[in-house]
Length: 292
Image (tube, rainbow, N blue to C red; front, top):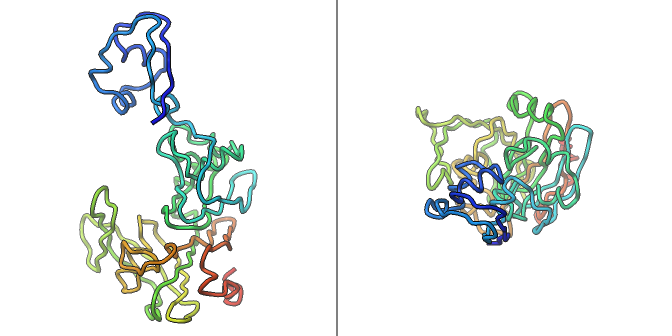
């Protein structure tokens, strides 16, 4: 962990009061970074204190990016659309994080979407994709547009299409509705059931097979809801886990073959850069099927 050395200019009855008065930080943030014993220490003028960089720069975005490099698909006056590679997080959880889309935007000096929703680390992100998932992701560039989409996301987004590769000849095309409950630490894995449960969330999607080649199927999934791990868990439940998705029973592969390909609202954005998919299928199939 990195630290910043800080010298006090006057006496304070406690470190807690000194930090709250000089940095304007909340009690909750103090508890996250310091023990109660540390916060009770008195401060004398000229004392040196080492403060964690994540504390000093709380809610700031590190302008250094490390990881598989995103690209900008499209930028308008209202939003920016990025290609998120697999193995990149959407947003940081602290200043030290450097492997997220927001770090990339800060490095590229794309400040508008970083100046939206500044009380939260997800900033202008309009939705989230799993770390392992690639594809198009949208960020609002102003507060009004951000809240107009985020507060009515289900109705505003007319279609969300994903590309998927699974093992075997997929023969379960159609619309599927199941019930989801989180399990494990912080709901890290979804349990899927055919039966309603009062604590479960309903999730629906529609699946179409595009091609079958050398023991693998290329699917297009139209996601109607947006539950955590929904496509991954639901396809696993149907007996066709995604290639590379070992959490839900998929075979080991270089990546998890799930790609957020197309989002439609009053506009449409397509991310044709389905990294790794071309090793199994000719991606011009999407144009041939009239899906682009």
